[in-house]
Length: 354
Image (cartoon, rainbow, N blue to C red; front, side, top):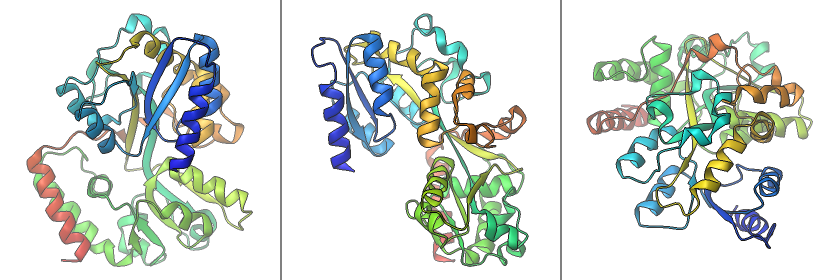
């Protein structure tokens, strides 16, 4: 991965090397195709140089240590308030973002950034269920409910073939939705109820996995996973490319889902906020935004992107959801320290089976 990141950085740095204007991005590895970068560089008559990070914590640590030289960053929703409190972000000039009108209203003015003061959404991922279509059909199991993860009567049909994320917040949020409780609840007793559900389901799960579930689904070792929709998209692609005798499905759950949002933001220390605004506006144009979905299977907040999706993705209920479905999706708030400590204790006990 480091070699790939270095190669992409080199390609970005050498393209249009004769131009003097440079936009510096601090970005998720592999999230932008070279075509997107080339198209923007031609439009702005500038160069784009990227540096990469693997998670939000790595990005925050580097910026907090005083790193300079970046214009734009792509933070997930749950770290934006912390970045704003640390005065790391520059308020956006909406007058220079005419394509902001292309973003569907459902994805704007969220609690993590009221009024989109600092960010615009760019890549959406649904914490949901990915599954082996043929294996579940044969056993009469419905993946459209969180029961496939938490109901022992359903799990008995797929015992040992189920994985869940190794993430307390993600698993507890899903359990709360299964119970019909707001995953952003502030009532600690609700977490106790969710823990009871998780304890009953735990014996039926094969493992907790943040990385291997994509491969395990794609080769058929696992039939059901609680994970991220973009990972399930990759498992679908891998199974298809390998000509497996099964297919990988991904559907939203009736009780609701957590929506993860990656955004575009400009750093307060940016040397070229003008180029950063140009890039934001470029990525909010339908044809350009669609390239992200076609590349990684992300749900797209830009309503004008749908026309440019791959034909098979237009029918995908996660990638191209109905408005009524979107209303069932929740962006998780940042936990208070007391809540985080309580959840950590519950999670530890759940994982060891106590």
